[in-house]
Length: 110
Image (cartoon, rainbow, N blue to C red; front, side, top):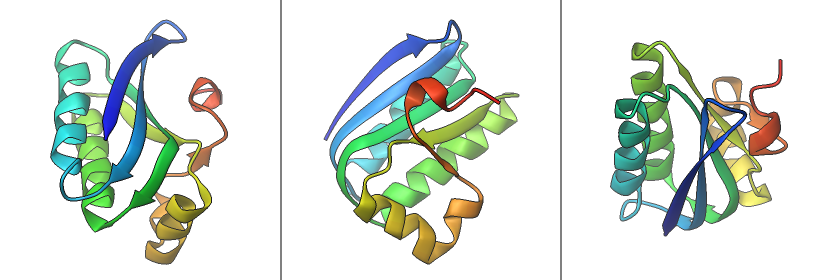
């Protein structure tokens, strides 16, 4: 799994993920989210358009990132979830907490 972080819309950290978000890669996602928040960017969007598989560890990493971002006064959103990933959110009812946005660039447009 690869993660790339870039700044979009001036103050949003877009974390772009490629590969499988599972028990092996979930700790790395937690580190990447924490690093962005430590660097002062508390508005995070995780772009899942390159993720072809996600398990409960991946869900846990996203929920953990959401908690850390909110404790820092920010938020974490997701974007571009593939059909398999979107199904995981729906089956666990976490789509109510982390709504999928079309793209990372539109995730913080309210």
